[in-house]
Image 1: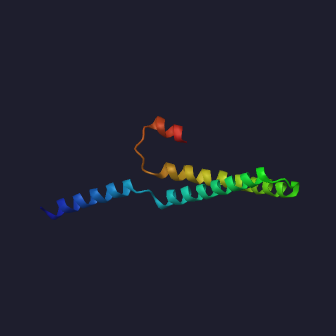
Image 2 (image 1 turned 180 degrees about the horizontal axis):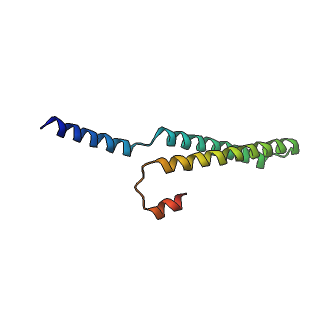
Image 3 (image 1 turned 60 degrees about the vertical axis):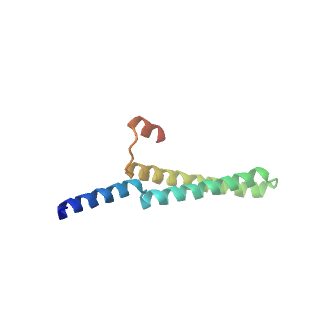
Length: 97
Protein backbone atom coordinates (compact mmCIF):
# COMPACT_ATOMS: atom_id res chain seq x y z
CA UNK A 1 0.00 0.00 0.00
CA UNK A 2 1.11 3.48 -0.69
CA UNK A 3 1.62 5.99 2.07
CA UNK A 4 -1.23 8.20 0.80
CA UNK A 5 -3.69 5.29 0.91
CA UNK A 6 -2.69 4.45 4.50
CA UNK A 7 -3.00 8.07 5.57
CA UNK A 8 -6.45 8.28 3.95
CA UNK A 9 -7.64 5.16 5.81
CA UNK A 10 -6.25 6.47 9.11
CA UNK A 11 -7.94 9.86 8.67
CA UNK A 12 -11.28 8.16 7.88
CA UNK A 13 -11.01 6.01 11.00
CA UNK A 14 -10.18 9.02 13.17
CA UNK A 15 -13.20 10.83 11.73
CA UNK A 16 -15.44 7.88 12.60
CA UNK A 17 -14.06 7.80 16.15
CA UNK A 18 -14.72 11.52 16.60
CA UNK A 19 -18.29 11.07 15.39
CA UNK A 20 -18.91 8.21 17.78
CA UNK A 21 -17.69 9.99 20.90
CA UNK A 22 -19.53 12.85 22.56
CA UNK A 23 -17.80 16.16 22.93
CA UNK A 24 -16.56 17.51 26.24
CA UNK A 25 -18.97 20.42 25.98
CA UNK A 26 -21.95 18.11 25.59
CA UNK A 27 -20.78 15.85 28.39
CA UNK A 28 -20.25 18.82 30.74
CA UNK A 29 -23.66 20.28 29.88
CA UNK A 30 -25.34 16.92 30.50
CA UNK A 31 -23.63 16.41 33.86
CA UNK A 32 -24.46 19.94 35.00
CA UNK A 33 -28.11 19.55 34.03
CA UNK A 34 -28.32 16.23 35.88
CA UNK A 35 -26.76 17.73 39.03
CA UNK A 36 -29.28 20.54 39.09
CA UNK A 37 -32.19 18.16 38.48
CA UNK A 38 -31.05 15.94 41.36
CA UNK A 39 -30.71 18.94 43.70
CA UNK A 40 -34.19 20.09 42.75
CA UNK A 41 -35.66 16.66 43.43
CA UNK A 42 -34.12 16.49 46.90
CA UNK A 43 -35.25 20.00 47.80
CA UNK A 44 -38.77 19.32 46.52
CA UNK A 45 -38.93 16.22 48.74
CA UNK A 46 -37.76 18.26 51.73
CA UNK A 47 -40.22 21.03 50.89
CA UNK A 48 -43.14 18.62 50.76
CA UNK A 49 -42.16 16.87 53.99
CA UNK A 50 -41.48 20.06 55.96
CA UNK A 51 -44.07 21.36 58.42
CA UNK A 52 -42.22 24.44 59.68
CA UNK A 53 -43.31 27.47 57.58
CA UNK A 54 -39.93 29.24 57.94
CA UNK A 55 -38.00 26.24 56.63
CA UNK A 56 -40.59 25.74 53.92
CA UNK A 57 -39.99 29.32 52.80
CA UNK A 58 -36.23 28.67 52.68
CA UNK A 59 -36.79 25.62 50.51
CA UNK A 60 -39.07 27.64 48.24
CA UNK A 61 -36.35 30.27 47.79
CA UNK A 62 -33.80 27.56 47.03
CA UNK A 63 -36.16 26.13 44.42
CA UNK A 64 -36.53 29.54 42.79
CA UNK A 65 -32.76 29.92 42.56
CA UNK A 66 -32.36 26.41 41.18
CA UNK A 67 -35.08 27.02 38.61
CA UNK A 68 -33.05 29.90 37.21
CA UNK A 69 -29.91 27.74 37.16
CA UNK A 70 -31.87 24.92 35.54
CA UNK A 71 -33.04 27.17 32.71
CA UNK A 72 -29.45 28.25 32.06
CA UNK A 73 -28.21 24.67 32.14
CA UNK A 74 -31.03 23.64 29.80
CA UNK A 75 -30.04 26.33 27.32
CA UNK A 76 -26.40 25.20 27.47
CA UNK A 77 -27.52 21.61 26.99
CA UNK A 78 -29.57 22.50 23.92
CA UNK A 79 -26.70 24.54 22.47
CA UNK A 80 -24.29 21.65 23.05
CA UNK A 81 -26.79 19.22 21.54
CA UNK A 82 -27.04 21.28 18.38
CA UNK A 83 -23.24 21.26 18.11
CA UNK A 84 -23.04 17.47 18.25
CA UNK A 85 -22.71 15.47 15.03
CA UNK A 86 -26.04 13.63 15.08
CA UNK A 87 -27.51 11.54 12.31
CA UNK A 88 -31.19 11.88 13.12
CA UNK A 89 -33.92 12.96 10.81
CA UNK A 90 -34.81 16.63 11.18
CA UNK A 91 -38.31 15.83 12.47
CA UNK A 92 -36.88 13.65 15.24
CA UNK A 93 -34.34 16.34 16.13
CA UNK A 94 -37.09 18.98 16.32
CA UNK A 95 -39.05 16.78 18.72
CA UNK A 96 -36.00 16.50 21.00
CA UNK A 97 -35.61 20.26 21.16
